[in-house]
Length: 102
Image 1: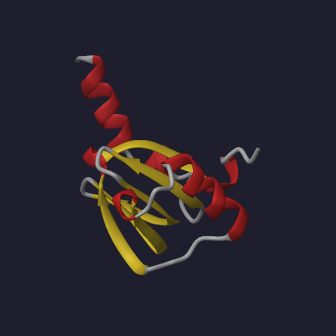
Image 2 (image 1 turned 90 degrees about the vertical axis):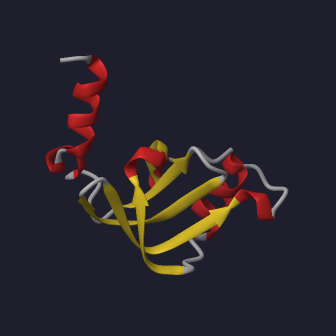
């Protein structure tokens, strides 16, 4: 089994997500989008966030890092009650509480 296959299995395993369920997380995507929201469920290749902020970075001059830091300090501006995000689009995942504020 290749390393890529092992990583894919770990990502799709519900057990690997249990520590993040119910927490506010940040999803960095391949595209110019960043999602912030409470992780509700991981199912069939999707992360399901509730009370989420889907932010298109093309709509602002703010960088991804600056936007995430501001949301960490000021709170998430939810614009989606629920959103399904494809796991294969995600390049980074972190808890919002783990965002470093200067």
